[in-house]
Amino acid sequence: MSEGVPSVSRISAVFGGSVGNLVEWFDWYTYSAAALYFAPIFFPKGDQTAQLLQTAAVFAVGFFARPIGAWLMGRYADRVGRKAALTLSVAMMCGGSLAIAATPGAATIGIAAPVILLLARIFQGLSLGGEYGASATYISEMAGRRYRGFWSSFQYVTLIGGQLTALAVLIILQHLLRKEDMAAWGWRIPFVIGAGLAIVAYWMRRRLQESQSFVRAEAAGSVRGGMRQLFFEHPREALTVLGFTAGGSMIFYVYTTYMQKFLTNTAGFSKDQATEISAVTLIAFMIAQPVFGWLSDKVGRKPMMLVAFGGGTLITWPVMTAVAATRSSWIAFCLICSAMMLQSCYTSISAVVKAELFPTAIRTLGVAVPYALANAAFGGTAEYAALWFKSIGTESGFYVYASALSGISFLVALTMRDTRAHSRIIED
Image (cartoon, rainbow, N blue to C red; front, side):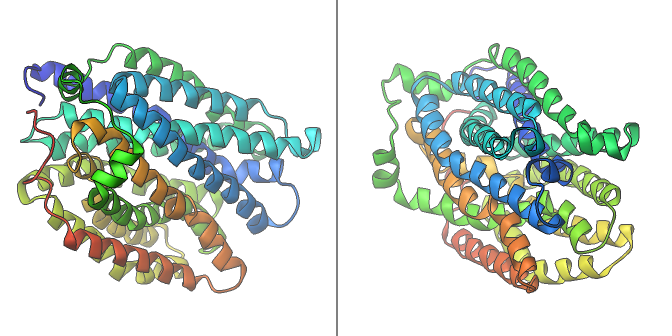
């Protein structure tokens, strides 16, 4: 961990940064988890695919706000501090969740309903754009060289945990409320819960210790990162993050947020079955993160990346085809879970492999902006692209598209140096 920081303080810092990250992603994924219910409320026209397509479009627009949030919050974190950026981002997410929870449907306020939904998602996108870079940087800097892969994996543990918690809340509500009540107003409850949790996370983050990497850089007067410095002084690193985020984000969203809709809309499972299968696979995915993060501390980051993207290129088509054809929940779980285990070789080290590429003065911006750009272009549009291919009758075209992006990321990983051996985080 950071030099001069006791082990208990390090663990406390990782925990504090991670819990706030969980809340942010809970708020973000609540939209996707509840979309099956509120799509007809905000977009009443058309069949289920058309309604989901419109909610997916709003989901994608939220992603396009993330690069702006990454730029604003990345500069803020590199100039003012990781702690300040983490606190601000969770406060913004709280506001977005409250807005969605309180907005009446299209039957009440007409076109204003989807407009407010869109604006709230843009605000949340700004928040999350800053959250990823700030939390990835903070956790990676607070972890020690020996176990940096293991400790930084908790960023994705809590990222997945946020999605899993959103699904868990939805499952509980499905069992407690009648279907009519769930469709009418029950879907709003997770957004209210998310806003409340964000307030708790805000309080926790105000008590965090600043990382020694930032403290030392600030004392030396070297914390002056900007976009010009990022792309003119570190173009290779920025393009590397862009390259492996493209395939990594696409495959991640295929098996997490989109899979719930795929199980219902293509494979023919009920909404309840789809939600429960998604929840169980996410539990396995979450538990796997520290294991693969620890493995990266032993074998290096690069071999892990090659396995993740090589595997994603080879198995996406057969897995998606097999899931679409099965009617067994158990078989669907095994297929999805096997793909997620390969993906864990990337997600477990997603934070640290980016943070280790950049010096302190530009680290948050370097992690956040290229990631947010690629995530917006490929991760945020994954659901929309999948539903579009389905709407034109060539759903298998999406499998090819996702596999191709994973192949591009494989080539990028093939050309990069192993950041475990060449880390630019010098504090231990």
